[in-house]
Amino acid sequence: MPLLHCILFSTTLPLLVFSLPATPSNSSTPSIPTSETASPSGGSPFSTSAPSSWQHPGFVISTPQLDFVKSQLSGKAQPWTDAYNKMLGDKDKYGAYVSATRSSKARATVECGPVTNPDIGCTDERGDALAAWSNALAGYLTGNEEYTKNAILYMNKWSTVVKSHTNANAVLQTAWSGASWARAGELVRHTTTGLWEDADITSFENMLRNVYLPACKDGTVKAPNWDLACLNTAVGIAVFLEDKEEYEHAMDVFQKAVPTIIYMEADGNLPLAREGESRDKKTLQGAWYNQQTWGNSGQSGQETCRDLTHTGYSISSISHILETSRIQGSDQYNTDIGDRLKASLEFHTGLADSSSAPSWLCSGKPSRVLEYVTEIGYNAFVTRGGASMPQTEKYTEKERPQGTNGLFYGWETLTHAGNKA
Image (cartoon, rainbow, N blue to C red):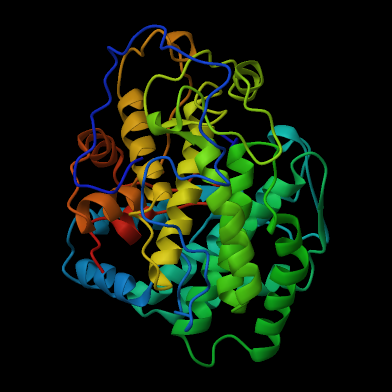
C-alpha cells in the first residue's frame, strides 16, 4: 500500500459531471465571508458540544453496530465474512495484524521523516496500533479472549515505553497511531471484564493524554489530511478519557476547518480560507496544488490535485469524526460538513473510476488511488439515510472487502457495510 498518507442534506445529489466548463469563472474578490462566520451550503448548524452522557465504545463504532456485524458473521453472510477473513490475513513487514507474535519493537522515541524515511519505530508503532484494533475486533466478534489478550499485549507494550515522536512526520505519525490506539482501547475497556488490569488502563490513559493528545489537539495547518487526522485522533482520545473540554475544542477546530478543505459551489467562485489567511485567488491556487479554477462541488482543498490518496485520508477522517459524533448522540451528517463529505465522496469516487477528468481539474490528470475510505460515509448517507450516491456505490462495492492502508484506518467493510445500527 502507499505509505503516504453542500447543501441541506437530501436524498439526492447531482452526479459528477465531467462536461463542466473548461474554465469556470473566478473572481479574486468574492463577496461571501470566510467559514468562521458562514455556512454557505445551508446545512443544519453543527454542534461542538460534548455528550451529556458518554457512549462506550463510542469512537467510530458502537456496541449495536458491533452486534450487527457479529450476527452477520454467525450466518456467514457477505460481505462481512470475506471482510473478516481479509482482516485475519492482512499483515505488514512485522507479521499479521491479528497475531500475538509480531516482531515489532516499542521505542521511547519514534522518529519518522518524510515518506517514513527514516523509519525508526514508525511502522512498528502504526502496525502495532492497528494490530491492537484488529485483535480487539476479532475478540469481540468471535468471543475468543485470546484475540482480546493480543490487543491488550500491544497496548501495554507501548503505553509504558513511548514518550515522543520526532522528525518531519512526527505530528502525522502521532495522529495515525493515536487513532488506532484510541479505537482499540475503547473497544477492550468497555466490552470486557477482568482482562485489562486497572494499572495498565491508567498507563494507557496517560500515554494518550501526554504523548498523543498534545500534538493533535489543535490540528495542524501543514496539510488538510494532517489536520483532519489530528482532529480525529483528538476526538477519539477525548471520548476514551471522557474529557468534555478536549472533545469540544477538537470539534470546534474541526467545524471551522472542513469548509476550507472541501469546496462547494455555494461558497462562491473561490474556496473559503482559514481564519487569518488570505482568500485571494493566487494564494488559494498555491494552497490547492496549483488548481486554477473551481468548477464542481466536492473538490478537496489543497489535495485533489496533489493526488487522490491524500484526499482520501481527509475523507476518512471526516467520516470517522461524524460517525463518532452520531454515536455520542449528535447526528451531524445533515449539517454543512456532512453535505461537504457527501459531495466529496461522489466527486472523488467518480473521478477515481473515470478514465479521464475535466480539463480544468489538475490539468486533467489527478493521480494515485483513492483507497479504502468510502464505507462509513456510504453507509451513513445511503444505508441509513436513503440517499442516492451512484458513484460512491459503484466504487465502494468494487473495492470490497475494504482492508487497511497500514496507517490509521482499517476493515471498514467489516464494521460498517450495510450497518443501520
